[in-house]
Length: 123
Image (cartoon, rainbow, N blue to C red):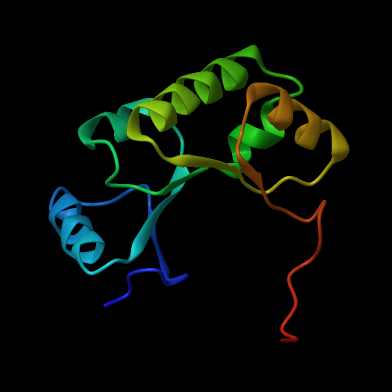
């Protein structure tokens, strides 16, 4: 089993209806689950709490935080779903200090993107 391991299985937010069953099986052997590219809170409403460990918000929403009240509102709603699900939130594709600051103000748990470091193939 993968209990107490650092294995995280990342699924794209545009998943099929049977994905919930697959997630349950992965969780049963101790694999952590991250949903990626989440654009709306409605996607998250179908899940029960503790089924998803991490929720990565779509980078396009994050980039718009400085200029769009609609993007902020959507992120706030997604963060409410993260709380309901007892999941950690990730602001992805942060490429500027202003995006980072806006994400922090909204209350994201984790942050990733070029602002912090470019991907590398060196281990």
